[in-house]
Length: 509
Image (cartoon, rainbow, N blue to C red):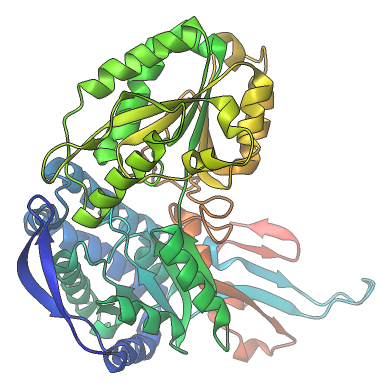
């Protein structure tokens, strides 16, 4: 493949800023993957691994001013948002360092022989080992947290897996800077620079997923792009796990009692959630079921006022801007779709926020209105007005998998009266995170977090946020009848590493 130049582009003007690199050739992808493969041994020591992750966080924090400036120039997300995202990224690296030190992720289980069992149990010792080189595909909308040093990279390195990152074309200069910082951190611990590879270009992304030494992949992006890579991962001579986050509508249900009790508050909250980051969050509420009648009308008035006061904003690139404008136009052309606040082109390089309304009955059956059940990336949401619970249920029954699903209940419903529990049960099959009286934008980095959901939200049952994200890059192995002298330290009876484990059926901490 021909090596094309890679440019940093200013989304505020659409103009090229500087040439950053060239698109990687197939040979360069091969070189990066092989260098990562050769670096595996340097991550074998968990103490070195955790120290590397902490140093990486320290070095990224120390370079904050330069990194935030570079990120803002390429994404227009603003210094406040980007500073917070960088802090989250550093916190995530340190959190995985703690997980590595604790060692519970190894899932050590030891069974001594038991001849009295039926059938007899031999000596069995199980734990988890790293898969190998992980391919990471950066996201456009999180240039730190889901990019070169983001959750996929942090969790893979924590698992003991080197990475090769396919940089996102919306922030190539930042990607180079972050990769350089990670390699400097690696060098401080004697880890080869190849432990974090970086390639640019669409064709390079395809070459990466096909490389025989790549053992798994993490992706955050569109349904179209993610599905193409997912299919390529499955079509390899040796298929590999593909953990992709593809797309999500993130439905919200507002009960009549909730709209009556606090419709103005819900309308204002919805406006803030759907316009946050110019609507460029993967958990943006894209479909909201609001009751017909006076209570719902009051909510819509509050939503109208709040969205009308929202300034136009810059999307990550002009391709996304064009897709947003076209997507809104296609939806507003549907019969009986109203636009109380019309979203679309704000200025030459900006977009304005808005929302559409439609009768929920239009969405309850397959047809032209299915378009309203697809994600539209940007500051727009669809409000479907429902007449009764059965109509709301009919719409929910038609939705694909989502990252999140939300219900707004009244105080009485939240206390157990009415259909609150039933609605939660209806939403649970739809999403990986179910919220009550909140908004889905904002994904906390916490041990109990799950950021994933049924397809097409994600292509696996795993999470890309939180401590359990490390599980994606590990596989279990059991040793049977292995002499004590040959066992890994993690599996020895005396537990020299002090690991949490299950020993002959008892949990030890």
